[in-house]
Length: 156
Image (cartoon, rainbow, N blue to C red):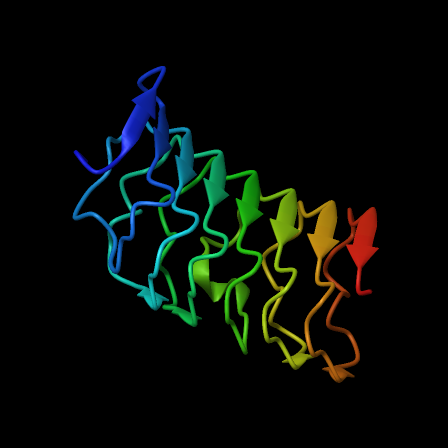
Protein backbone atom coordinates (compact mmCIF):
# COMPACT_ATOMS: atom_id res chain seq x y z
CA UNK A 1 0.00 0.00 0.00
CA UNK A 2 1.19 3.51 -0.79
CA UNK A 3 0.80 4.64 2.84
CA UNK A 4 3.45 2.13 3.94
CA UNK A 5 7.21 1.90 3.62
CA UNK A 6 8.56 -1.31 2.15
CA UNK A 7 12.01 -2.72 2.91
CA UNK A 8 13.55 -5.77 1.26
CA UNK A 9 10.24 -6.34 -0.57
CA UNK A 10 9.05 -8.43 2.38
CA UNK A 11 9.07 -5.99 5.30
CA UNK A 12 6.16 -3.58 5.39
CA UNK A 13 6.11 -0.65 7.80
CA UNK A 14 2.76 1.13 8.13
CA UNK A 15 3.57 2.52 11.56
CA UNK A 16 2.67 6.04 12.71
CA UNK A 17 0.61 6.79 9.57
CA UNK A 18 -2.57 7.98 11.35
CA UNK A 19 -4.47 5.05 9.86
CA UNK A 20 -8.02 4.62 11.16
CA UNK A 21 -8.54 1.38 9.24
CA UNK A 22 -6.37 -1.22 7.58
CA UNK A 23 -5.21 -0.89 3.99
CA UNK A 24 -7.37 -2.96 1.64
CA UNK A 25 -4.59 -5.46 0.93
CA UNK A 26 -0.94 -6.27 1.62
CA UNK A 27 1.74 -7.82 -0.64
CA UNK A 28 1.45 -11.61 -0.33
CA UNK A 29 5.20 -12.14 0.34
CA UNK A 30 5.19 -9.87 3.42
CA UNK A 31 7.17 -11.45 6.28
CA UNK A 32 7.13 -8.45 8.68
CA UNK A 33 4.14 -6.15 9.09
CA UNK A 34 4.19 -3.18 11.48
CA UNK A 35 0.92 -1.30 12.00
CA UNK A 36 1.94 0.38 15.28
CA UNK A 37 1.07 3.89 16.36
CA UNK A 38 -2.16 4.20 14.40
CA UNK A 39 -5.78 4.69 15.46
CA UNK A 40 -7.37 1.40 14.40
CA UNK A 41 -10.37 0.57 16.60
CA UNK A 42 -10.89 -3.00 15.41
CA UNK A 43 -9.31 -5.63 13.20
CA UNK A 44 -11.64 -7.71 11.08
CA UNK A 45 -12.09 -8.92 7.57
CA UNK A 46 -9.74 -10.85 5.36
CA UNK A 47 -6.84 -8.45 4.73
CA UNK A 48 -4.43 -10.85 6.46
CA UNK A 49 -5.66 -14.10 4.88
CA UNK A 50 -3.20 -13.96 1.96
CA UNK A 51 -0.16 -13.41 4.21
CA UNK A 52 1.04 -17.01 4.39
CA UNK A 53 4.68 -15.86 4.72
CA UNK A 54 4.04 -13.44 7.61
CA UNK A 55 6.37 -14.20 10.55
CA UNK A 56 6.24 -11.02 12.64
CA UNK A 57 3.12 -8.94 13.24
CA UNK A 58 3.38 -5.71 15.25
CA UNK A 59 0.25 -3.76 16.10
CA UNK A 60 1.07 -1.85 19.27
CA UNK A 61 -0.04 1.59 20.48
CA UNK A 62 -2.87 1.54 17.93
CA UNK A 63 -5.97 1.80 20.17
CA UNK A 64 -7.25 -1.61 19.03
CA UNK A 65 -10.23 -2.75 21.12
CA UNK A 66 -11.36 -5.86 19.25
CA UNK A 67 -10.04 -8.46 16.84
CA UNK A 68 -12.62 -10.60 15.07
CA UNK A 69 -12.45 -14.38 15.13
CA UNK A 70 -10.38 -15.66 12.21
CA UNK A 71 -8.77 -12.31 11.38
CA UNK A 72 -5.31 -13.89 11.07
CA UNK A 73 -6.35 -17.14 9.38
CA UNK A 74 -3.96 -17.97 6.59
CA UNK A 75 -0.91 -16.58 8.43
CA UNK A 76 0.59 -20.06 8.67
CA UNK A 77 4.19 -19.00 9.43
CA UNK A 78 3.40 -16.40 12.08
CA UNK A 79 5.94 -16.70 14.92
CA UNK A 80 5.81 -13.41 16.85
CA UNK A 81 2.74 -11.29 17.55
CA UNK A 82 3.03 -7.97 19.37
CA UNK A 83 -0.37 -6.59 20.33
CA UNK A 84 0.81 -4.70 23.39
CA UNK A 85 -0.35 -1.26 24.48
CA UNK A 86 -3.81 -1.40 22.96
CA UNK A 87 -7.23 -1.52 24.61
CA UNK A 88 -8.29 -5.18 24.59
CA UNK A 89 -10.60 -6.22 27.37
CA UNK A 90 -10.84 -9.82 26.10
CA UNK A 91 -8.49 -12.06 24.13
CA UNK A 92 -9.12 -15.33 22.33
CA UNK A 93 -6.71 -17.41 20.28
CA UNK A 94 -9.58 -17.95 17.83
CA UNK A 95 -8.24 -14.93 15.91
CA UNK A 96 -5.47 -17.25 14.63
CA UNK A 97 -5.45 -20.52 12.72
CA UNK A 98 -5.48 -23.53 14.96
CA UNK A 99 -3.01 -25.06 15.26
CA UNK A 100 -0.47 -22.37 14.52
CA UNK A 101 3.28 -21.75 14.87
CA UNK A 102 3.24 -18.73 17.19
CA UNK A 103 6.10 -18.86 19.68
CA UNK A 104 5.84 -15.35 21.19
CA UNK A 105 2.68 -13.42 22.07
CA UNK A 106 2.83 -9.98 23.66
CA UNK A 107 -0.42 -8.69 25.18
CA UNK A 108 1.15 -6.35 27.74
CA UNK A 109 -0.48 -3.05 28.68
CA UNK A 110 -3.99 -3.74 27.50
CA UNK A 111 -7.19 -3.83 29.57
CA UNK A 112 -7.52 -7.57 30.00
CA UNK A 113 -9.44 -8.45 33.17
CA UNK A 114 -9.55 -12.23 32.86
CA UNK A 115 -8.39 -15.25 30.91
CA UNK A 116 -10.73 -18.21 30.57
CA UNK A 117 -9.97 -21.82 29.85
CA UNK A 118 -9.94 -22.09 26.04
CA UNK A 119 -8.75 -18.51 25.43
CA UNK A 120 -5.24 -19.79 24.65
CA UNK A 121 -6.19 -23.05 22.91
CA UNK A 122 -4.29 -23.80 19.72
CA UNK A 123 -1.15 -21.98 20.90
CA UNK A 124 0.78 -25.19 21.56
CA UNK A 125 4.06 -23.80 20.17
CA UNK A 126 3.98 -20.74 22.44
CA UNK A 127 7.22 -20.25 24.39
CA UNK A 128 6.80 -16.67 25.60
CA UNK A 129 3.58 -15.03 26.82
CA UNK A 130 3.59 -11.46 28.09
CA UNK A 131 0.52 -10.31 30.03
CA UNK A 132 1.94 -7.69 32.42
CA UNK A 133 0.34 -4.29 33.01
CA UNK A 134 -3.19 -5.50 32.44
CA UNK A 135 -6.06 -5.53 34.93
CA UNK A 136 -6.26 -9.33 35.22
CA UNK A 137 -8.26 -10.30 38.27
CA UNK A 138 -9.18 -13.81 37.22
CA UNK A 139 -7.32 -16.70 35.62
CA UNK A 140 -9.63 -19.64 35.15
CA UNK A 141 -8.20 -22.97 36.22
CA UNK A 142 -6.53 -24.73 33.29
CA UNK A 143 -6.10 -21.59 31.17
CA UNK A 144 -2.42 -22.42 30.55
CA UNK A 145 -2.91 -26.20 30.41
CA UNK A 146 -2.25 -26.62 26.67
CA UNK A 147 0.87 -24.43 26.64
CA UNK A 148 3.33 -27.33 27.05
CA UNK A 149 6.29 -25.43 25.56
CA UNK A 150 5.80 -22.25 27.58
CA UNK A 151 9.12 -21.01 29.02
CA UNK A 152 8.26 -17.40 29.92
CA UNK A 153 5.02 -16.18 31.48
CA UNK A 154 5.00 -12.54 32.56
CA UNK A 155 2.00 -11.56 34.71
CA UNK A 156 3.54 -8.62 36.59
